[in-house]
Amino acid sequence: MSGLLAEYGLWLLFAVVLAEQLGLPIPAMPLVMLAGARVADEPMYGVIALLVAVLASTLGDLAWYVAGRRHGHRVLKLLCRISLSPDTCVRTSESTFTRYGLATLVIAKFVPGLSTLAPPLAGALGMRPSAFMLFNTAGALLWAGAALAIGLVFHEQIGVVLDYLAGLGSAAAAAVGTLLALYVGYRWFDRQRAMKALRAVRLAPADLLDMLDSGVDVTVIDVRSALIADAEPVRIPGALHIALEHIDAAAHRLPRDRPVIVYCACPNDVSAVRATLKLRAAGIVDARPLLGGIDGWKAAGYRLEMIEPAAGV
Image (cartoon, rainbow, N blue to C red; front, side, top):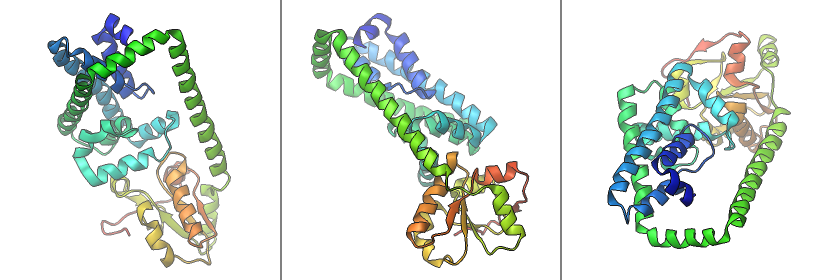
């Protein structure tokens, strides 16, 4: 990598940072740190590298922000479908936005998964473009500056490591490539195995509609985050809004002699599945997640009701 950086310099730095922010599984920080190590000999190189890294990061983030503004949470679902990260990444990002608001964009690049998801989530939630650019650029400056500073401080140690790897030649590159391939393969296999197990327990929207229309005494729970529920204030008729984070505390108040159906608005119904597992652990054995969540329900054309501003648990 150091040889490529020496040969292609700032163009390589720009390309790698942009690729990472667009969602490719390419770690950009090590390359920015390598650029920082070079600052010890060329001080002005650090200023240029900082500007290049921030520009590349901002362009990638802006593309996702625009996609989020135009296509809403469908973009987040796409990201989680193609990502090797767990599907709970969207939920984690929503929770972080709920807690920290605009400051999330400043810290996002230091949190795996959140770095790519924060810009489209900001767009989907309707964040103003001016506010997005201000806080996102501040985050990019902080991230790139920190990586360059680390490279500068440890430039001697980085040089020793690079010299050692250069001495190993192609064997080192082959070993790194093999380890990366094994890691990606394991994550993909583990993800597929988990998703196969989840599909077996979900209830189809048509089955829930039949239960409601036939008068079955059923409890329906909406575990969407407050952010998502506020952005789309509709629910399946009669559903209780209990955020995933509050399921454990609310479980003792729920009936145990009737079916409990849980839905969310997340990729692969993962939040609903997690809530279902918590409810079953609390003794509610007939708890099941709804296949496709509220999006699947809406796609089928089934009735919805508005959420009153004061609703929620």
